[in-house]
Length: 210
Image 1 (cartoon, one colour):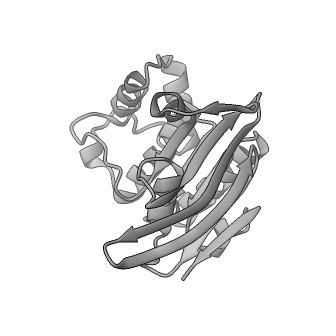
Image 2 (tube, one colour):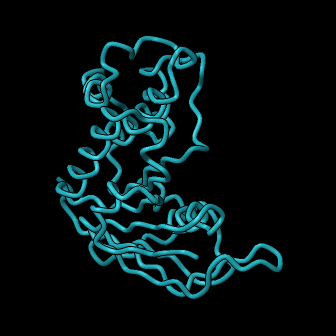
């Protein structure tokens, strides 16, 4: 369980690319256990908004602030350990095993995972028997499962998920939806870009982009 209150507050977010305006003056406030669903047609800016809320992309104007028990986490170095990010753009090292990818990502965050933690994360996403195999042998669905294994292993308090159900079969979709439900019950904060009605059921807030 998350043992402290985390809040993300976005104020008056506007994003423009040249003369094109994706969205203007979007604001929201989310706390532990909340789930923001961002919906919209292709090209409406769903992925862009999620990246802005994760502070991976700067808005044209507006601000995104993370609070931990009321204290501001202002700079990127303090913000980054709180978040886990999944998107179609995230790639793994193909010539490393699934297990080695998780261990590498943990070291990049100055975390040391016990072998049992790695195996537990892989098992929970159905890759327990495939952790020693090179990622280049994985199907697209298995790679999507591995992305969720990184969230389980690193245990970020805020999940940013862009098209989390993509490339998954029925079993995989059910597994991921179970992880989303569990994350909310644990008090994690979720921000997800999706048009999938199954994911949308977990929303406590929704932003529909047009």
